Length: 295
Image (cartoon, one colour):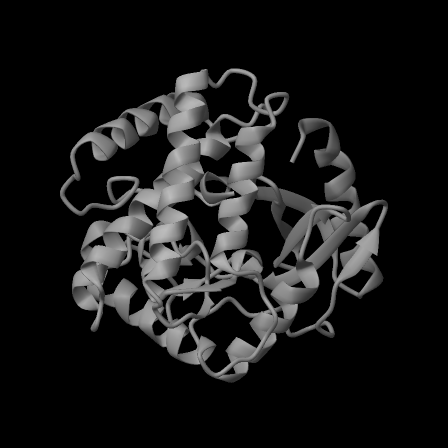
């Protein structure tokens, strides 16, 4: 979120919490990307705040409710208030349960894979209209085509990214693999270790596609703990995801710390991959950046 908007976003979240009977004298910023995530105190609730024009909060709330009912490992809405989306001063706010961090901060691969498998199993039970993963690819393609939004991207690099997105989107789609509801960005930044086991957050990125598209966001070793993975498809999905997140690093509005350096590094990896297929590996070397790294 733009720095100038943060004070108003915090004020909106505190005011909404107060209107619902939750005391919110203070706010701690937990994460700031395209959406602001706050811990409101002393009521100890997590508020997710986004501009009205840039949010899919209704979908996220519906998915959280239904997945929680199915026993899936996802963050729950705050039980003290009725589930819903609240609007104030040009922002939408949703209120979530706060989970106290527990050590270790990194979820063991087997536990990570088990949580993702459980999430996918629950998602197969839902019939919810969501974007297709190819819609996410189209967003990156439109960004590449907009020179005003990506002015620092060299022509050769723009063509490399455009060709990678175009060819891999076609290759993956033509495989005919069954689609299902996916988290969309189940990287470590969206997985919280809690006393009751790891849970996924940030359901606004949910989409439909092959399971391998989700696995492409996870560290390398996670796929080894999952059954029935198409390794060739996973390889293609990893390179596709790498091209997408690299494109977003060149958006002049990108707020990821050190984003431009990462964009240069990932461009080099894509160049090498297009010349000679690399060993199968995660697009971020097993350490995805948090939140906005994937958009």
